[in-house]
Length: 250
Image (tube, rainbow, N blue to C red; front, side):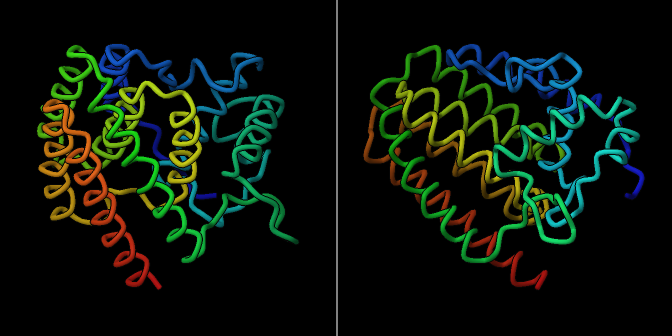
């Protein structure tokens, strides 16, 4: 396993900012390294959070072997909390068994990616429509703050990846529908298996911001149809960028 840099100060700051916004929208926000997979010991929680983040950022790549002893050494932990973390990741579908290789980070094929985006478009458009009807003024203000934050970090792909994920989660919470929220949490987990969004290039990062603004504008205007249309366009453009990336990478 290659050496991984563990500098996380900027990520920690962004996580703090996003947690404040998510509290404003009333979400039981997942907190990195502190509140995951309830019922396990604190070191198991920390191992889970760090490994999940490593998958999200591409430090642990799709298809890479998940070796308990190497991960324990990397995290400077005993094997027990790492074993617990791997079991949780496997339950979420982020880690799978792959024949003689053993456990690996799950790798989605082209068809799986297309199916994932199709479901994401349907569910997120429903969430945005409900958000236009149900979001409070405080929740909309929190979304506005997240747009301002996004503009400030456009040149930092690593921080933008995490912020983008939290922006979409905020919209889910604004729908005030627990069933949609649960389904979209599952979709968001699967999305972690894709290459980090920052790799689609500067142009896509810059076009995503006005698309996010259009979504929030529609929610603030209480126009559910416009909110649904805005997020559908956004997801389809993200899918197009992803397809291009997949084809270019072979």
